[in-house]
Image 1: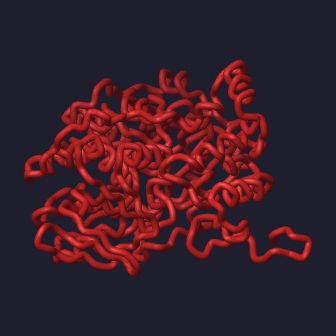
Image 2 (image 1 turned 180 degrees about the vertical axis):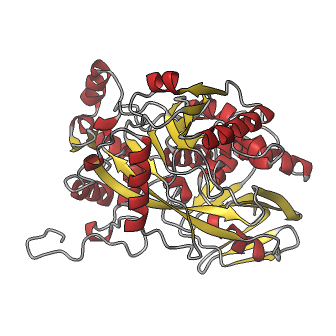
Image 3 (image 1 turned 90 degrees about the vertical axis):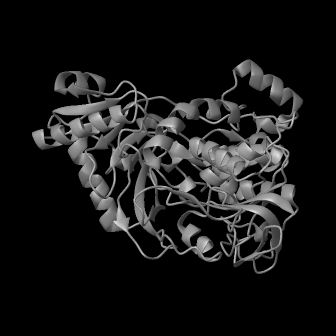
Length: 479
């Protein structure tokens, strides 16, 4: 029997498991997909919000500000890229200025540090590429950017390094109460546990209903994005928001920690929790908004587009509660969920303590992990020394990103182990350049096949039926 089972290996579930792995507990993480970070944690704006948007007194406000304060140290421990680049909410009119004033006061009530309204001259000195129609902005110096899927992977990996167990392809179909806790079942497996932490994202309401909790509903909100090549890194240095509406923070322009430029997201309420298609209507909205905000953005440098589904709860706030002994909901974690995730994990720790779970620190706990980018960003001298010891680090597989065979093999051998092409991509950035895996994909498949002892033709793009190769030809090569 496990002490704690976390359902959902997104950024919140990963950081909850990691926070609990420092204690003498048997921890299990259940994930319905073939890898971790497969939901909103791999398809979002990658923003660490300052905390001025949420209404004072809400969990969103409290946990956003605390999470913002924690994020840099958490990323440092986990070897995850983080940058405190600051954010700007721009205004085009006096009506927008009034809204920015309200956000300023709300931010002050939430104890966000350094907020101020800046005028056109200073604003355009900070960001010369902003439209001349923009007259003012709310400046939040504590805003930042992070790599959300690397944070998730590293958090789950660190939890596993400290003894937690991960079960992928475990889609929960039933939860029943037992004498000592719960039995959580899938079609082919089951686990027993004393405590359940429900971090199932857009499916968290369905998990809650399995124990009779019908107190909330979750619906998905579509968010489409366009990603530009890394050569555009100097166009903007801050995260640029539009003045928000009831549907969210609007379509933004932001650099990423890997020096790409990200445009989006759209915001469309949905009913289908599996619909992650991008749309022509969505792209048109992104491009129109970007043209209004910026003097110029080289859309012809687009390398990919994607869609994420945000978990919108029926209560208007994060839903973190315990409807039954030993069961905790962590639901409706929409924006600023990524920013809040370290603080949510801390909050869950306190809830478990109050519920009577004995939390005894284990002396062997190690909170740190070597970064996936350690070799890529090493000095020439350091790289030469590594290559001398292991020649695989001298063989480039992904030419666009300069990723080597050694880095890919190292990623495959670490917790949590990737078992498909996209899993390697999220860990190493191989296939993330302008060719999007057109050249390096077959070589990555070959490495996965060898390392996992899986037939070449059985390697998938993202698990399930996402096969890439159909059959072996007479010449011995997969097609």
